[in-house]
Amino acid sequence: SSAIRKISARLLIGILLSHAAIGQNASLHEYMEIRVKKNTYWWAGVINHGNRMPLSGPYQANFNSNYGNQVQPLMLSSKGEVIWSDHPYQLEYSHRKLKIQGPVQYYKGGGTLRDAYEYASRTYFPPSGKMPDSLLFTQPQYNTWIELIYDQNQKDILKYARDIIANGLPPGVLMIDDNWQEDYGKWNFHPGRFPDPGRMIDELHEMGFKVMVWVCPFVSPDCDVYREIMNDKYLLTNNSGEPAIVRWWNGASALLDLTNPDAFAWFRSQLDHLVDEYGVDGFKLDAGDFEYYADVNSFKPDATPQDHSEAFGKVGLFYPLNEYRAMWKMGGQPLAERLRDKSHSFDALQLLIPNMLTAGLMGYYFSCPDMIGGGEFTAFLDDAVLDQELIVRSAQCHALMPMMQFSVAPWRVLDDTHFEAIKKSVAIREAYKDYILELAVNASKTGEPIMKPMEY
Image 1 (cartoon, one colour):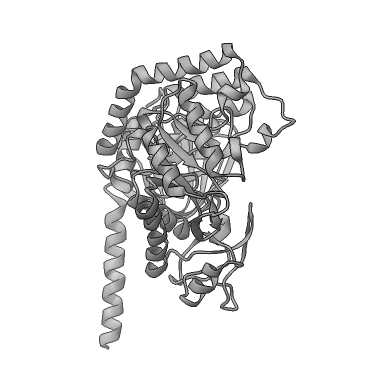
Image 2 (image 1 turned 45 degrees about the vertical axis):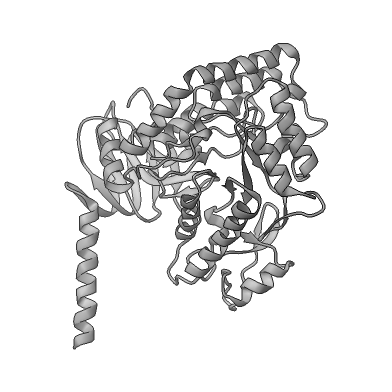
């Protein structure tokens, strides 16, 4: 019948497109075992496991989790091999044997790690030719989280900014973190803590800062916005057809269904209002982790948790000043990707270089190594004991990375000697900022990582 012919034609087109996407010399597999030869090494796209790359000891990963950070469904070998999938898969490595469970594409290739990366980049995540706002690379970033935590307010944010200048640090991007808003999903400045947000942002601009505010895809079920958009079907639902209430680190909330074009447009309209009304320059887009999208129903019936994370990632494409922590399959795009929050410890400091190198190899080359001294706020509460040398070493590590982000105020927690070392690290970055920006521009055009392991 005509209907059957139409279905058959669609299936044939799908098969042809699928094979076209595989690329020359690549093959499809549902299960693979690779005997890893001596002096051959593999990198996997789990950014939070970068310290375990290249694989040497026993290792397991499941791409149904993003491990609190970016992931890319990609593996690269030092001999030019590539494994890729548009879907989650499981991998296991032990005794020089690599096992892959799930639908993957395998490219035999040949040559080097660089050959493998260049094939993967041009085939699966080609560079967009665009990059995030250049200020993210040329000047330090300052995030209000550690200083204010959940007490984000106009008076203290302005004080933080003035103290940056007064203590001899240059202005850059200033990020106003979680709890500036009236409620989750109600993206207005809290009227009690921000009596004149427009004037605040004007003052920050006059000081030389660009201003980002924290947002997430959650909506509080107790606010009026929830009731309005619930009726518009903008929220993910449970099996009863009611909005799904998801537990996350700040409680229990509904979740925007960004596979619904109308919900996507509504979320963008809320962000655009902040830009147009107050002069906000960009957004820190937090959450988007796979775990929050499990067992929900959406506008796109077959949407996976990874699809929802990717949809959230696409919001940032409309705002050059952006930052993400969780991500799926958005390598090569002009998105600033931050390593997940690290503890205030030398062990955590050791993670920065390998995790940043892995991020670059997976196409997330516009990356930021968390916050200087660590981003886990519990380490900075009143009774916490801070290690001044650790904060200095962290700043020195950041200084020649793609981005450098402060949060804890170094002038508040350091003595004069250690704070002078901080300012010296900022001065070193200043001397190399044009070169760092040049590498970022090159990455946007060629896909070549900004930070590269020596093997590359």
